Length: 196
Length: 167
Image (cartoon, rainbow over all chains, first blue to last red):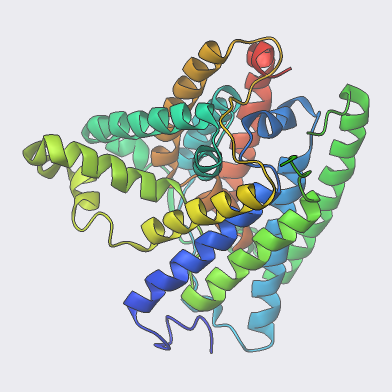
């Protein structure tokens, strides 16, 4: 029964090797999609290159449906999977701040690592900035702890708060992705396609 | 070697999605990035000001065994995988990603500023695009979806003001 690590199939040390291998795959696919290149990422926000949207939502749907079906088949114990805790206001505000940083900086943390190892000098500056920002956050932490913990709801999933089954939420996510893909395609043709 | 074109975004999305699914199947957890950076940042601060790190509960949490951590190994893998993919496609060369209307020095400055804003936001959210939007999105975590729409909303709203940098 999966998750294998949680069911004691291998040790924590072996888990670090698994982390390395999964990381190699993660980095490979990010680079293949063009995510090491800041301008390609940033052109998403002008509807000139929809790669970010397509890659991200395709990945979410594949993993989401995989988890759902594997648990339906009885292969995967979904209760043993880590669900990010929700601090709704902290994450809403943090997300807004991060989005501003994305449009200005042109990277997010994972893609900046790929940019840096493939020779993008702006990614190195971005990484220096990101670590500076994290340092500032750490320094300010004692005075913003209330903000950091604002809106705690526990490890809740959309199906819990909407009071429907996770299959219904997953179906809605698939429909949402198709609508967004079509809308973005329309916008791309209208605003001038510039796919790098 | 001439640079090869990027692969289809759907191929990239399926590859990433399967990688994320395998992380759930093998480890029961998703992928991430900013957590590893926080550990590196804390390690640097710790070298210069150990007492200061220990006095701050946020830094202290990351200071113990900073590199013997799942996310750190995963990020080392990301470096290897990104480098290999770039090498196989002939894309590994020094350059600065920018639009035609900005100098590289201004772009470097904006990359640093944007990075600083993002670093702060990622810590406040307890995750970034990988650890919260992608992982939380796939597990249908409420915070992951709220965060993802906040990120895209703010990025689209900011884009107009920095258009000289990109288009």
